[in-house]
Amino acid sequence: MMTNLFSTFDPSTNIFNLSLNWTSTFIGLMFIPSMYWLMSSRINIMWNKMNLTLHNEFLMLLGPKSFNGSTFIFISIFIMMVFNNFIGLFPYIFTSTSHLTLTFSIALPLWMSFMLFGWINHTNHMFTHLVPQGTPPALMSFMVMIETMSNIIRPGTLAVRLTANMMAGHLMLTLLGNTGPSMSTNLISILIISQMLLLTLESAVAMIQAYVFSTLSTLYSSEVY
Image (tube, rainbow, N blue to C red; front, side, top):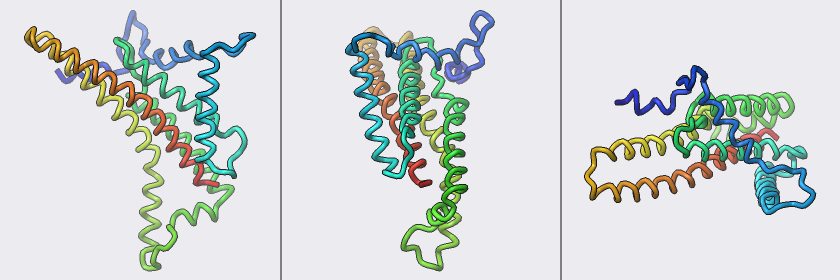
């Protein structure tokens, strides 16, 4: 039972002797609107408006000392996460964001690049982050250890937060779906309504988790200036 339940999160399953699960990561590229039309369509207008809103939001988080164009990497991460989270809600499509292989592969290089840039270019500023303002002298050494550990686990918390939230909703949908054949006819309508409400909730979670991942990455980046 448990093997079948978690098999939807196994990227090693093969279809026609080909491992096609990871192709769901790139399906979102087909939905990106073309930018080469002579006149902007409604999709392009909505796309540009969303990018501008995200740009202003991330620029405010990064602060005035950020480099020009640094917000675009976080916008790209947000769009990638949203596409993969939503695509995973469709039947028989592997949700790549529910696997630590993808989320940790994105979180770790981001965190590592922030740390290398900060310690190489703003060493004194990075040392001041280890001791919060107003810390008593007797607790300074203790606070340095706490801040260091909290900084080291950041890529892990980024990856696990997204993976756990995406996996939890899918497990609930799978559990409710598996109980359908054994339920009476009178309860089937209640099950369908519950599935629809849970699917609506998962759609909101898909967008919220993508926003949380990109926002936290932006905040971690802003601390190295």
